[in-house]
Length: 155
Ligand code: SF4
Image (cartoon, rainbow, N blue to C red):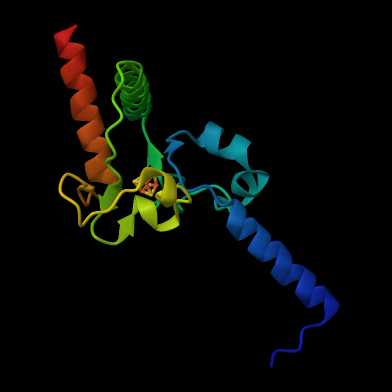
């Protein structure tokens, strides 16, 4: 059993709290933006909340979750188009049940409280999961950029 003093306990709690606040999305590849998000990053080049770290030469290290302005723009355009597409399909009356299956490890239904309502049953014909391909961050971003460029070319 670990015996912590009250001060140790407060330090552990604060550390855990910071861990839960850590952002897990992408950040604009811009030192000013990262610095404005957390004073700790400004002072030390690392942060318990911002997903970026600086190398000794002052640039972001390879593990930093940063993307440049064009990539950020492509990501916004992709999300905007996706939302419009989903909205259009809903207003057109599409009601298909297609829960995701991410690499056979994460299923949309696992934590969903509506199973008794939707009656989805993968053993029944026509009740299929929508497979989501396994992509790392760079691959996913590239796919979104490609789609964004393709749409731009179609305008
Ligand atoms: S239980 Fe039903 S509503 Fe929930 S994610 Fe699965 S298919 Fe969708």
